[in-house]
Image 1 (cartoon, helix red, strand yellow):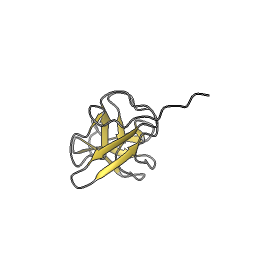
Image 2 (cartoon, rainbow, N blue to C red; image 1 turned 120 degrees about the horizontal axis):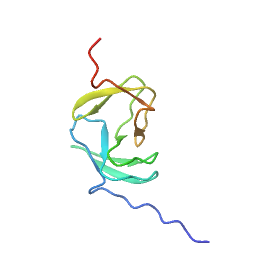
Image 3 (tube, rainbow, N blue to C red; image 1 turned 180 degrees about the vertical axis):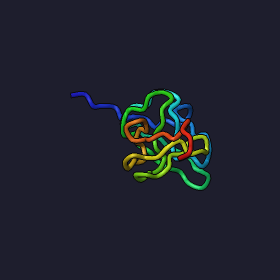
Image 4 (cartoon, rainbow, N blue to C red; image 1 turned 30 degrees about the horizontal axis):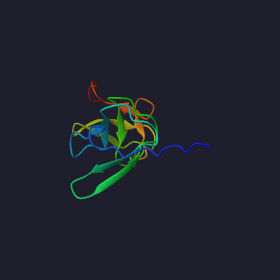
Length: 105
């Protein structure tokens, strides 16, 4: 029986955090489920294991986000979590209610 190779840590060129206020990162290529990543914040590092496959250009959480909490990209609020989101979770329409392009209520 052949052993499965462990995923290697990727850091360069795999994802980008656009603004220090963001709680998401953007995949610069497809990132497979189980991939370990390391995000260097200003004063500490965050180890992330990707929970679901994240397609190129999509977002994943870099911190825990509670239901109803804001999701920030570009340093701006882009929506709210519709359910709790774990570090490493793919963020898309299944767990994000977008507020972009909507008039204030």
